[in-house]
Image (cartoon, rainbow, N blue to C red; front, side):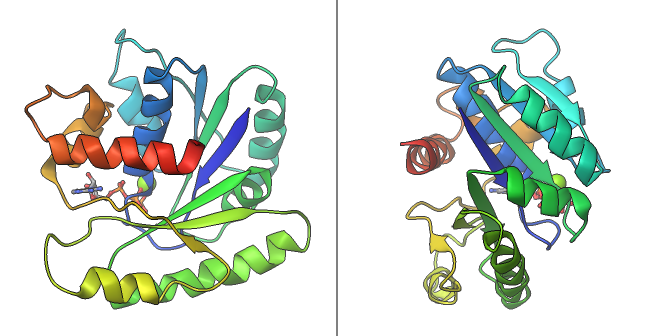
Length: 209
Ligand SMILES: Nc1ncnc2c1ncn2[C@@H]1O[C@H](COP(=O)(O)OP(=O)(O)OP(=O)(O)O)[C@@H](O)[C@H]1O
Ligand SMILES: [Mg+2]
């Protein structure tokens, strides 16, 4: 049983897309997965609802208040192999509750100054959470550039209290297209974007192995 939370106080960094690919990716591996949308916007809930009858089936629930999130996830922990939580892009009770529930926190960020600075906000929240319990935190470079030196510079700016994941996720249309339909890029036709698929497999391995 593992609880993974995809968190960042910054919006639009690929949290929901990452959570979706992790939840579906684990279900494709045969795991019984609960996806939890902790964002009022409800994007993960809406995306997964678009799957309709498609297998694998991913259970999804939305809890936007910290206390309800905590109670419900603790209850669900006995029923699922993996729980993936997607929180909104702001510091609120749900984000703080998710931080305390998670075995692993994934912090997506873009290779851009404002996004890199937002990692310091997450650092501060991690310090508070770690006063209460152990939390593994991993920074994930998302929507990374195909070329240039920004990716490397961004990696070097990651604060000490989180580990930079060895895998990155590139800016690829396949992620956006698949996400809207509630699909992982792993479910797209094989010819569609093999790099997006390889990145997603590598991410799953890095987090869960
Ligand atoms: N790797 C990617 N390549 C291209 N587009 C992406 C990628 N990841 C996410 N996107 C797109 O970028 C936008 C923001 O992504 P997403 O909704 O996952 O971010 P978020 O952090 O959950 O945002 P919010 O803070 O609003 O919840 C979406 O339109 C999504 O489809
Ligand atoms: Mg989101």
